[in-house]
Length: 565
Image (cartoon, rainbow, N blue to C red; front, side, top):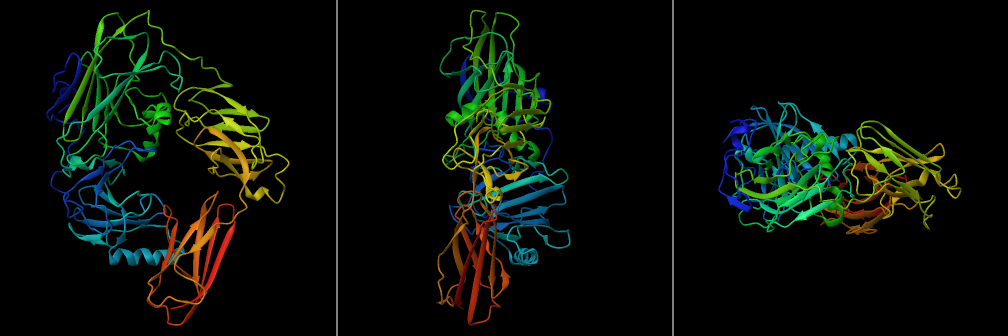
């Protein structure tokens, strides 16, 4: 069915919000039904869905609840072979990728452990490379699997904030993640999306910023909304499923002017290369201030995001007459449960938005490289980094107590960036030669932005505007043993546990040695836990453990202890 045919599938109200029964969802292609089975042996229930708006990205899969516990059996959803197995510090943690003969790849993240065959492959590579985090490609002969084969146990590894399974289906050739529920792997859901609010943006000819006039409309207000010149519209909407309170992502958002499509956002497929553009897709300044995500139905000129499947121009609207016009939002979940809201607008020359004057130190264009230089700073922004033109502002503040430079106020935190830019700050004379290797750039919360001293500057690449200064990191990471001490008998213990922490630049590496031989140390960054599971071949008797932890400024902490095993 063509997209244009689907716009007529539901009638529209003249005013107000209405919840409608299920209607056909918009798809650009068909997906196999019944081919993939469930990855779990429990009834499916979602804590997160495909396309859901996260703090830094669009969610690329579905999150399956695992009864708030670790260790449920995890199964291959179809025949195929394991094409990749991975261990990350953060990110997806322990993960498995299975290629299927129908051209799709299933992905399983945050696992607690792999099955015996995969665990052996992973451990062999970890010892070969002498590192915990590994990424192992496999050919089709290494680990073939059948539908329903157990590939491991669910968990809470990586950046997971609670036990669950993050599950994806990708196009094998392009690696583009696709909405898993389109393949029939659906969660029980007859609850239509909730529309919390509508926002009108008086855009005029100015770049979108925190100064753009905003009007947040009451859904109960039936008055005609005055506009004057170019404007845009945004929506605050979420989806909920049966029996849960999670705010999940919707599947499609359509904006229609007098029943004609202006913009259609569709969470059918995503691209990892543009997933970070979520900050341009939402009203980022409003999110920073209110932690509320308004999804814009217009697009910034340099936003490459691929979720707009219908877009008239850039999605902004300019009315050509003074008649009343209807604007309708139609929001669906992947089941087709639908909510709509209609309101009226009219061009009114007497309406003059309150617009703050937006001047800056320099005018930056999104379609070229931009450079700014002052006495103590250089900023180099590549042409692909800005989403829109920018009235760039800069000023210099006082030197902090722990600083080795003045504070450099680089525009502000309300403007998102698509890519990193180069930031160079000149240190003052207190940064002596012995401290230069320890120099680092931080923000006002002392969060590290990285950085190295080079030719009179401390330079780094960062993807955020804000306020920065130079400090130094001379303090080694801390090591806190949890269950071992000098001379302790560890015979009844299967593993040795530590907590490690670094206060500034962050943990760069950790290495453990027993009797001089490298041993695998496993790490969970969110809990700062580091541990080693004793190998079966470790002989009985006295042993010496050495643990080395190094931060990104090469500060090293060493812990050594004798123990009995």
